Image (cartoon, rainbow, N blue to C red):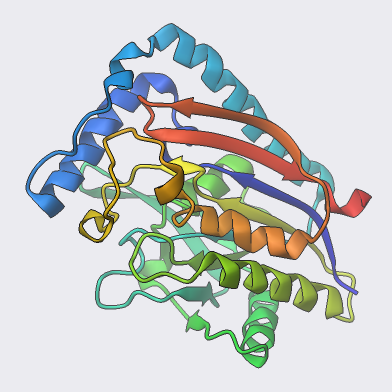
Length: 293
């Protein structure tokens, strides 16, 4: 039978950047919000209360946690890593916004946009056989999955996936399965359905009649101000850098909730959580040694 040998979850975006870059990236994020809504989002006063030195010290805990995840993948040597995250108008645009999607190709090239120019990174092999099993198994379990045979130029633009893969698997030598769970486009799949989706993913992996060793990686959250979220449909208060339980419970936590369904009752080893107003996020890093339970 297949085995889930480990599972991890981490924040992305600012969580993968050194604090010295946050002010500049936050400005770019605000410009994206302004293009969408005509004005910049209101600033959170606590942004000015954070000192750069303190942020560097606290961020080191996040960075160390992410390094622990990288080492865990290298130690476990899984046959495949399933990366679960959302897409924020990157690979999927307004004309095609699936709730749940699987990439079915044989390879993918991580690609980032800097100053309007696209920079291609490593080429990752994809475990298309596992992706196909998941597709058939999930549809049989009444989950409607969008199957993406290709992306233009084989480029992975999603910042919930590409930078995370580069950070955790820099050698690009472990096959990946890319899973997309809508988080910021309204309406979005419910958290309850995300959990049941994760349970189904876990069942499909374990029911296979082979010895496939799989790791899961959830990318997103924990709290996150995104310039791409349709704020006009959100009735609660918010500001740039705000951390809001009412909002965040229904946003990128969906990625974490999905993979929690797959790991079942395995206990979590919470590595760290830090809230950064300059980094407009509550950043978290966690690991589950599923194989040891």
